[in-house]
Image 1 (cartoon, rainbow, N blue to C red):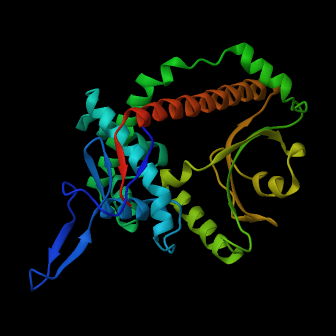
Image 2 (cartoon, rainbow, N blue to C red):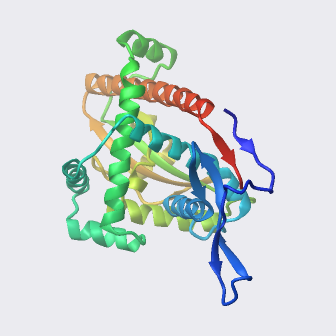
Image 3 (cartoon, helix red, strand yellow):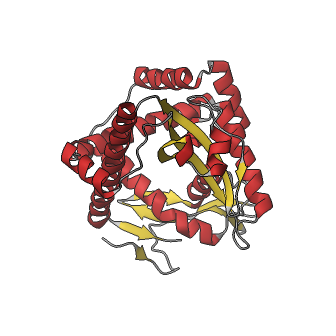
Length: 309
């Protein structure tokens, strides 16, 4: 069903959590319910904690958590609660060994020791226990998506070829071909000024160099290019990079870039194969996102959701 906006007057069954002062008659409200999702409550403290985590992940720690931000994020938290309920309903369980393997894979791919991971988590105000819980949740969500959506999506060779014809590239046979990724932090005169954007860009680069996978996952594929095909401001900052290396912060008129060399190919055939795989992944991800949103919308329509914010 639709999200239902409820009047300030709340039925007796919906309780406020009260912290009693010295006098019982002068209670102070420290928490309250902001939404009910299929008889499960979401409290204001949960919503604020979720907002704090989002701001931390997006390098906006200085942003004030106000009513507008909470109103924007509440639907996301409701969706998370719906997904968690569906995971329980389907009996999806992830054991300790699977979490151990996932963390070991993260350590291997980022060339980290467990002590380094603990230090990184501590610098973000987290500990290994909460991080393991995050990993467990991610694996559960992936299993849900795989069972409900992923297995229904197929990208054929014909669709990849059709995309290639519709989006032709220059002949990449001359010289090395670089597969480039980018993180962009824009600035303007309203929501983000240049000084703040630069601070965020530098913090982002530091996090990438520490091996923070959450930040590294923000890289977006730009495509595959020879040096001669690249814009000068890109070429000048990636031409001396090796596979997997990242550039310094690069300033343009509209914002700051951080480039990463995802791969380097020596031949035209290698480049074409890589481009086809990029296209296949792009089309697959677009369909996966679209199909998942459709499935999630179905969950919302079947659910009982009351918003009390």
